[in-house]
Length: 192
Image (cartoon, rainbow, N blue to C red; front, side, top):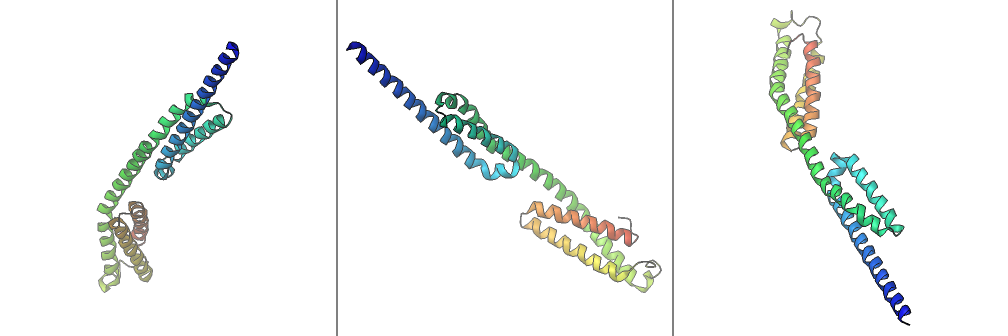
């Protein structure tokens, strides 16, 4: 009778221990998942490989949980949680790095392009005048005026994007302006 009672008590302790491990493992999985979900919008944009790696580790932990390897989940989970917690910081750092590079690009382009656009506009106006006919030899003035209109329009679009806070679009458009301005300068025989 004492042996049966001792066995029942031992069984109750083991069951309670397993239940406690299961709850701890489940809570750990929820915490990891919530941490990943909170960081996911920025992480998906800026550190997608790192996000995918952590999602894979979480899937492995869930598979271990499904196999009732609660001790394994509890053992491996904190490292995955730490990685998930660092995900937001990694995304923020990458975002800052990209924004700094974009800002540097914009600053450089914003300093150079207004002068280049003005020089191109002045050259087109000079070539249109009678006094510029000799310089205009071999230049299609109407085409140059159309291309100048594109350059001016694109530059306005780049400035509007910058003013709206869309640095990515502003830089991309400004780079297109630079490319078109350089091509037009070649046509106009103008050294920018």
